[in-house]
Image (tube, rainbow, N blue to C red):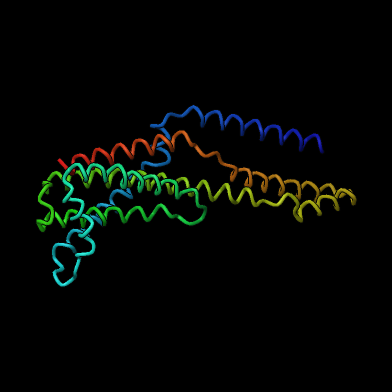
Length: 243
């Protein structure tokens, strides 16, 4: 019986190694399609909705004072396009990185707050619409803002994916090596109750498979590539916005 269990373990380990090798061979394009595409598309649509709603609020609700929101943007405009380009590198890329890195926190999907970035750029657009910044063209800024939102939504999608993996790894780290099934197994071996012993061993096998499924590998290479691509998109959007 012990040899049979040992053989099952070897088969399971062999299948696991094959699966890992197969995962290592997939391209970034395949990774994006499988893990990020749907999340990215959904989040981009949500961000666009937030962007439009925030812009409509900012341009139609006259009784609300948005001076505090506009103040930083107005100060930025006074520095001209050079100051705005500098802001793209110092602030926007930092926000992009924080959104993705926040995915290391298990259970709490912190990257979702990246959706508020759309709210922020919408009110920058409102400032231009109300002639509070004359150095920027409203059309190019709108296009650039949407491109930036597309890039940020990719980081949010990657952050959510990373958070999911972090949660699984945390659960795996909390696993218990000794359970009640181990006690039952020892008892049935002493009693030589083969039927119950096989039943307990089957339960142990299923439990081990569930636990092993939590032992996921974080694809750091693909996540770094995702950050580089999303940052590049944000930079492109930023440059378009200040043309």
